[in-house]
Image (cartoon, rainbow, N blue to C red):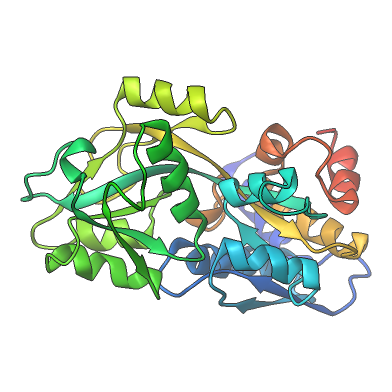
Length: 312
């Protein structure tokens, strides 16, 4: 097909709402301002709106993944962004009863790491021992990822460092740049905190576990995966960075209407198929969802769409 026809065909798909789609409003839980989840949430809403404008999604700032889970269970949110480690603990019933939540879509993989000023003396995780480290907002799943990663290395994130927990995720970069924190923990391509430090005058250096550290972490916490952050994910990052992490998910409250989950899955699937999704949604595809979603946890409405498209 000539390029002009391909472009016109893609535009037609994006401009055509689902047949018989009824207006509906749902609530999406994100996290504190300044972190990656609110940015992703805005892109998610924009992407779904392109394909299904009758499905109105209201973004709600929360304390993050650890608050999103009980809010889904209580029905005060319809869908929410859940970091991988929080999803693992909730579904497995670690420290709480197992959560009856379903996956709508995979979001993206998160490689956990530290950022420090490029002119700082810190080059390894061991260099940060005893130093003030901003782990993130208390409700963030990234804090839990950091706890698991440090435990795998034989460290206690709350005792072997001077832990700083933020009221707002966006407060972390300033603390690194003015010296109140030696490092900021975070993760995810284009993560705002890392971008801010990387674009600053001193620039950024990223610190992740070495190959032996990754092996030790994965041996102790098998639900984590080796995740590599591609070169160019952040300004000035010229080489890929290997670390550990997991996939985050958009999850649904118990009893979410199957038609709503189907419409979300269809919109995201058509968006991926048409090409040029918002950059935050590049990994948010049906194929990735099938590949990484916990077994038996896909929402029935999503399963319906995946079967129609031949992915299940």
